[in-house]
Length: 332
Image 1: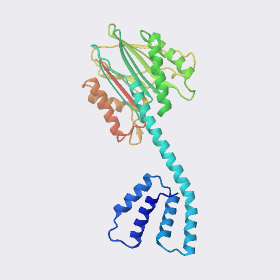
Image 2 (image 1 turned 180 degrees about the horizontal axis):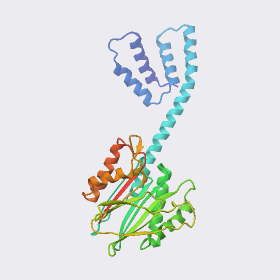
Image 3 (image 1 turned 90 degrees about the vertical axis):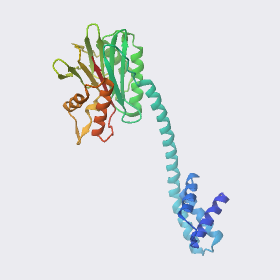
Image 4 (image 1 turned 30 degrees about the vertical axis):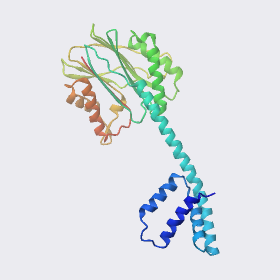
């Protein structure tokens, strides 16, 4: 049954329009239209309201009435689609709200803190391409050793974010994580991922440890994007090559460990492939271009380096990221 006050409002507005009332303004139309929309009036109900308003105020001949009945029937299909569309919009709105909450929870769980230590200046920044990120980094100053992890789920969105949350808790629970070698850490995590993650997904990870007593930087990689080592003595950037299968691809995978001596003024830069897959003029940027950007800011504190480099990379894509991007700088 139609709402009588609503019908009367529509009827009055219709009669003013038919009589060419000079006092009728667009605002009247807009206000009633917004009211009907807010009340969820579908197109077929609006046509029925229009016919009822005409019946009350105007004599309609039988042919005109039948023509309106035909219009009403035709509009019923549109009305069904309208209601389905509104229901879909409501579900999408609810899903967006739930994703916003999940993104905040993920941010609280995964966003790494940067520890302070006397032997290194550290900066890190991570920006998701969507609301939820498939990137993860972890920097821990544990008993004088600096452990630095950077990882990337192959994929984006909610599945990648959920997988990365699992990786975070797996890392926290590994007993060897306290003083373990990078190769042993990756082997243990590989078992966790291989048993618990869908076969269509896998994880790349770079795990490293710096010992300020021996000045040795040790690392192992599970298919992760190579970082950069900067030698202050040679004023040269070198790729941190470390090979190994991504986590979750094969059970029992073993990882090779690499080591190098760090001298005062040296730097380490770690990144995910979202950085190297930045496009400029529709082409992926070269690693040499990333080095050129780093050189422009490398005299700044580490926290400013990562922000400035990320800003430059985002400018290349008009501030739009196609993939999650994480960038870490360590200055010794």
